[in-house]
Structure formats: structure tokens, C-alpha cells
Image (cartoon, rainbow, N blue to C red; front, side):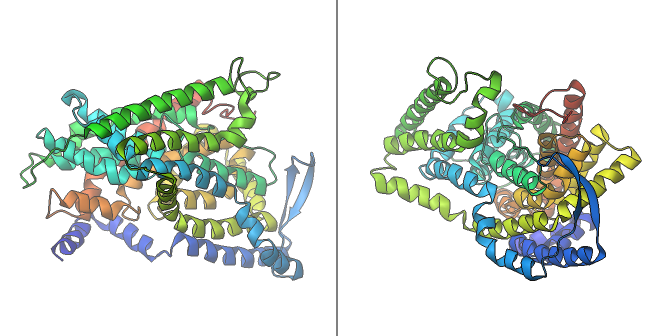
Amino acid sequence: MANDKNVKKDTKDVGGFFKTVERVGNALPHPAILFFIMSIVLIVVAEIMSRMGVSVDYYDAKKGEEVALTAVSLLNRDGINYIFNSSVKNFTGFAPLGTVLVAMLGVALSEHTGLFEVGLKKMLLGVNSRVLTATVVFAGIMSNIASDAGYVVVVPLGAMIFASVGRHPVAGLAAAFAGVSGGFSANMLIGTTDPLLTGITNQAMEAAHIDMTLDPTCNWFFLFASTFVLTVVGTLVTEKIVEPNLGTYTGAYVHEEKPLTPQEQKGLRYAGIAVIIYVIVMGLMMFGPFAVFNKPEETGIAQIKDFLHEGFMLSILLLFFIPGYVFGKTTGKIKDSKDVVRCMTLGMQGMGSYLVLAFFASQFIAYFSKTNIGIIISVSGANFLKSIGLGGIPLILLFILLSAFLNLFMGSASAKWAIMAPIFIPMLMQMNIHPALTQVAYRIGDSSTNIISPLMSYFAMIVVFMQKYEKDKGLGTLVSTMLPYSMAFLVFWTVFIVIWMLLGIPVGPGAPLYLN
């Protein structure tokens, strides 16, 4: 009860803006119910627009000609039949559904055998004190490859590592939290977030009758480079702003270091060897004389475009599954096939809420396509932007700020993107912005404000971690501690994308900045 009082007290200390954010956000229903409500609103709006005869002239890439699109009602015989008869197809055909579930099978095995936790501990324990902060931030960013595992492993571990060398544990917690959540979209590798958001982007383009498909690697170049930018920014904020403001730690916590066991060390070594062998084999299968995935008649990345689009998720599954199995077998976590299935099942149990969300999101996006409202809004919005002369870099900056603001009220990255993509992907394509660049801009804004939004699903848990070291601190302390990271990430990440655009570098393989 004492902690509850502290949380309330600190929340008031934050100020009016954050209290308003928390109050508005808490008043919103669960994202799944929000999609249901928006589907009802969409049906009503479509009926009104249909009766008014709202239409736009639109270039249909599939037909290769200019067509007039009119709003379609779902409150007539054909519309009601569509709602009922297409619901299962809308759900099973929802692009992100299969990609995420396939990848999570491999992630689950690595997570529940302990490979992620032990690997991150090995990465952080015993690191040189001069690069300790950078290592903690970097480990937080890289932990996103394992989806949300960083929140429960890296964040408390960052605090523990700082405490072990006599530094303020809350500073270590903040540095890790900034990497895990503020840098959620940056990574040197492809993780589960990439196919999830790219799948929604592809679904949005299909709904708008746009004949284009993105690969999960479409943001990789930019996000790879962003890993180092955010590591530097997060390190400087920690050492120059956050840690000096926290002062000397006077709490009662005493660190007790538990070294890795010989079996865990051996398991990590064997898992690392397994990854190296797997990467070499996959490289040979993609390029060179033993390639089976490539198209010899193509050049460059186009040689393996089909593999990246269709077969990449199975390779991601194996990338996690193989080292996870080797580690589990070495440490005794896996004794037989039943243990393998048990670990994978535990991981899939956590996907239940995502399945519910995916059902309602898939219906909403399908209705957007059927009613033509998405295209009408996109074309009308693009015409407005053209009339005021806003495009290129100013347009991307405005979109980043919008994404960052909306993230304060709705925590789920995929849920927000499922709402925004059907509108903004076609709209910005009308302004010559490639959808891969639009997706990157969204990810910058969405990630930067995660760490100051009390509505972020793991925020309360981070408060609990912090109270292990500062019992009289709560929500307000965490928000005020993380605010410098959020502002710095948003500013420097935005500056970085502007420089990237000025240099004209593609954001990923086969993903230029502009359509023309």
C-alpha cells in the first residue's frame, strides 16, 4: 500500500500534461475493443458518405487507368453479406498474423531455455567500466531481437550492473530502459517487429489497390545505423544528465553477483558455434555456387527477393530455434522432444492477446478497403498537402511528430500502425514518398516516446524494478528520469533521418526514399 501512495504522489509531481495523458489514455478501451468501435464508426461513416455520393478520381495501378471511386455502403444487402461472409478470410489473410507466429516459435525456444537471459548477462557482466554505459544501452537496443525479453531481463540487469560498480542503480535501469524501449525499432538484426509492421504496411497497400510489396528487411539499412546513433545519444544522456541529477546512491540495496555456471558458459559457447554454422550455411544457400534461393538471371539483392518475401520468416525461426535447442540441450533444460514443444507452447501462450487484437484489426482494415474510405481520405489528404506545398523532408518531420504524439495515448506499435498505415501509406505515396520511408518515420516517432508514456504496457513493471532501489519513488520519478532520453532520441533520430534523406541513401534493400 505504501508503494501505491508513492506512485500517486509522484504522478502529481509530474505536472498537468502527463496527468492529462494518463487520464485520457486510461479512459481508452483495450486496442481490440477500440478496433471494434472504429469498425462500427467506419460502417456508419461509409453509409453517410455513400448517400452523399462522395468520390475521388484515382489512378488504379492494376488497371493502368484513372478511375472514379465512390464510397461503398456496408449497410445494405451486399455489405451485410460481406461483413459476415468475409470475417474468417479477413482474419486468416491478415498478413502480419502468420509471419509473427512463425517467428515466435523460434524466439520462444530461445527465451524459455534461458539463452536470452544468460546471453545478455554474459554480455553485461565484467564489462570495462569505461564502456559500461554504452554497453548497457547497446544491449537494450539489441535485446529487441527477442521482442519484449529486454524489459524483463536487460532493464533489471542494467540496474544491477551499475550497482555492482558503485554507480547509481537507477541510472543503469534508465540507460537499459532507454535502449530497450526508446530504441525499440533500432537493431543490427531483423527481429519480430520488422515483419509485423511490414505486414501491416503491405496489407494497407493491398487495401488501397497499390501493386507493391515490401520485404521485412525494407528498413534494415537505416535501423542498423540507428543502433550506433542511439547508443551514443543514450550514453551521453545517462552520463551527462541523468546520473548527475540522481546524485550519490544512498539506498539500502547491496549487490550480490551470481556468476554464470560452467554449464551455462558451455551452452553459450555451443550456441554461438551453432549460429555461426547456420549463418554460413544460409549464406551459401543464398549466394555463390551452392545457392538454391537465388535467381541467376537477376543481380544484387533482387536475386533473393522471393526468399526475403516468402521464406525469410522460416530462416528467422531457425536462427532462434537452433541455438536455443543447442543451449537447452547443453544446460539440461531440454531432455527430450516434449521439452522442446513445451518451451514453444509457453511462448505461443503469450500470443493469445495478439490473436484477439489481430482479429478485430483485420476486420477494420478490410472494411477500409471495401468501403474505399481509405483511398478517398488518402487522395484528398494528398491533394491538400500538394496545395500547401508540403512534401519531402518537412512532410516526414510532421509525420514523425504526429507518430510520437499519438504514442502517448496508445502504446501498441502494431495497433497504432494498423490504424495509421491504411491512411498515411497511400497518402504519402501520392506525395512521392516510398512506403518504406513512411514506415521508418513512424518507427522513429513511435519508439522515442515509449519511455515517457505511462500507458506503455511495461511501464508499471519498470516502476516496480526502480522501487527495489528507491522505495519512496514512483511513476513521476520514472517519467522525469526518462524525459531527457525521450527528447534526445526524438531530436537526434529525426536529425539523422534528415541527413539520411539529404544523402539519398535507401532505408533498406530495394527500398529507396522516393517512388520516382
